[in-house]
Image 1 (cartoon, rainbow, N blue to C red):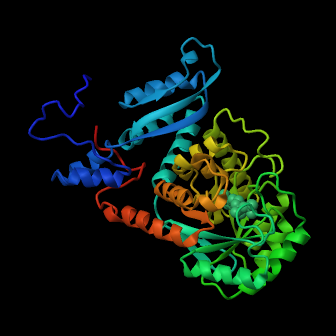
Image 2 (cartoon, protein in one colour):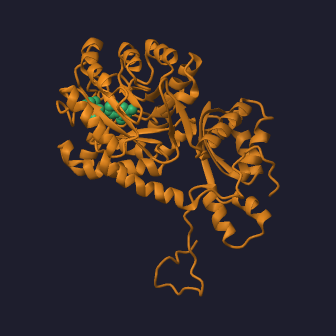
Image 3 (cartoon, protein in one colour):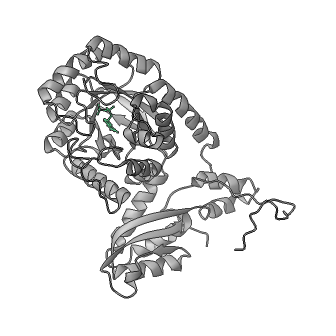
Amino acid sequence: MPDTSSPATARSRSPARVLEVESLADVAREVERTASDPEGVAIMTRKGRIYPVRLDHISLKAAPLLKQETLSVGADSAHARGIADHSVASTSVVLLATWGQYQRLLPKLKRQPFRLAEAADEVERALRAYVSRAPRTIRGPHRSFVVGDRPRVMGVLNVTPDSFSDGGQHLDPKEAVAHAERMVAEGADMIDVGGESTRPGAPPVSPEEEWARIGPVLSGLAGRLAVPVSVDTRHFEVAAKAVDAGADVVNDVEGLRSEGMRRTVARTGAAVVTMHMRGDPTTMQANLVYADLRGEVYAELAAATDRAVLEGVPADRILIDPGLGFGKSAEQSLELLLHVGEFRSLGYPVVVGASRKSFLGWVLGNADPAQRLEAGVAAAVIAAEHGAALVRTHDVAPTVRALSLVRAAQGLGGPSPTTSPDLAAPDSGP
Ligand code: HH2
């Protein structure tokens, strides 16, 4: 295409405008505004946006077949150059297709050998999960809560002497309860109570010590808050006692790695935030090498949640978190934040904790967590814009105010009546 983008180039009478469309509903609205035939709106909407989907471990036999099938519906798929000369045994693939093309492609793939049927099921599942913006009610043992209706805020209550940004501030149970009430008054939708710092290099705390810190706070909060309480712990003994004391959510920064924790969560009926971290806080920053950061974090969260579901944790009580700053460099945390919407493809509500973290300090060139407020709020806005359901923050009031703008922006369009994102719907269009 010759470059005619200079403003000096003579314009036609009708200047062309590139449209910003994120969802199929956005596409449908733009098509409708042309006063298009109503039947045509649905057909054309399915063509209006490409959903790139990544698959790994596609075999040498399957990849050319996949390419052929995607081309046959007018789409395409990228794979390793070595597939052509058989110099690789398998490849990663990026499918490049519109919704309508997937509607034709997936049934074809389901009839193909070499595990392409399985791949088609996976793609279908990911696409459905990714586009779904339906609110969900999550049931805890004491109360239910809704996510996905608007970006929600989890207020941090660290009852520790050494947390990286607020250590020692809420050690007195009375003060801690007052701080929780203050955060709820500021608009927090959940309070996350923790008794162990998990900052890089933090010394581990025994379950007994941890409970001694948070037990009195949880008792003090019981029956006082209009929002659910979550307990930020790696210890199943602490999680069990906290649920008994009124917590509805277990926030496990070790991502349900421990069998005891999986059993406790299944037995108590708690909801659970499954966060990604390699190693533990003393070791996690020692090895920051990922061949494919987002792919590996995603696959490890998929494995962790699959295992939990197999062992009795209901899928509709699970939330996931990519774990910014936990075994990630600043650049890696930023990459995860900017692509956090991808994690919606797993089908679980996504939690993001960026507040005051060192990757913000890296961007700002400052070492003081107290100087990271605006960047933390910006990170919360980015996460919410990308569809995070819950944002974990120390700075509730400014975050709630900022997210009310995201909520307003996301709510402006509303769903389009003519768009069905159902992949199973027969595709009448070309
Ligand atoms: N970050 C921290 C602790 N818990 N839980 C989830 N789900 N996601 C997070 O990003 C996350 C978390 C670290 O922050 P903080 O609690 O303020 O620090 P410390 O671990 O030093 O107490």
